[in-house]
Image 1 (spheres, protein in one colour):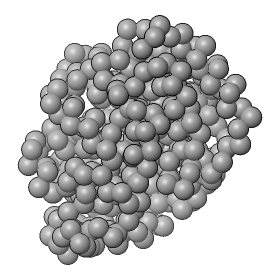
Image 2 (cartoon, rainbow, N blue to C red):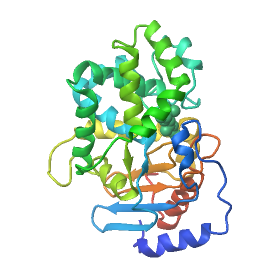
Image 3 (tube, protein in one colour):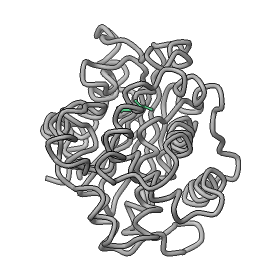
Image 4 (cartoon, rainbow, N blue to C red):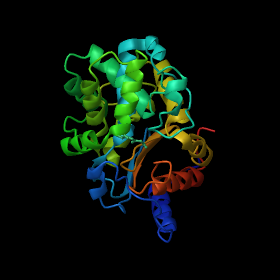
Length: 307
Ligand code: DON
């Protein structure tokens, strides 16, 4: 990385993107998400040595949606270790996040833990091991984020529960193949609540720092996951974090990352920094249109990616 003045880089990016039309539409299949101002734009970067840098709507909380699947995967890996991979794969799907196509052909084993089917299986695993799944999962995320104030958004979770027919189709198909062990409604409930967690860009970037440090929580020094597990989570993010746009994200940005239909994207460079952006308008693949542009410009201007 050349010696970067992040504040100047952020300013330049915002100026450069201003005349660009913010294409895409905010997610509306979860009705609560359609109420958000689609033209918000925020960024927050935490650098291990250089500290915090931010711009725009970086302090406003939003629905992190599928980004929270990194936290549920982390907890499931801590609990089950390598046995987890008999329930879910680590291959990119090349299909949409809510697609049913591969599931039947592949006997109810989802390609990876970030497509909806995979994240639902992870929730099923957590249901089997946690005594109070919703509370225990939220407390784990609060611990990773060093933030006791994080919350589920009940309205968003209930809104998705009412409209989540695709996720219902996925879970029933997987149950038929024997890959769901708990009550279907309870597993979906945990899944919808997981997706409804809210953070702002600052909170999000900080909550991913344990994957920058090789598994260690910066504040407490506690080992969240082993360096080997951190490597694997980053690898799955690189290959599967953007569904059928994972190749495009690697090609343009060159960092492991994860998106959500709330318009958030987190990306990180192991050993260096984590960065979160938020812009609710999504492209056709369900990833933030402007978020992708911001991150492409960022790694280009910093001359820094993992490749
Ligand atoms: O299950 C769903 O469809 C949403 N709760 C999460 C999807 C999502 O965030 C996909 N990411 N881009």
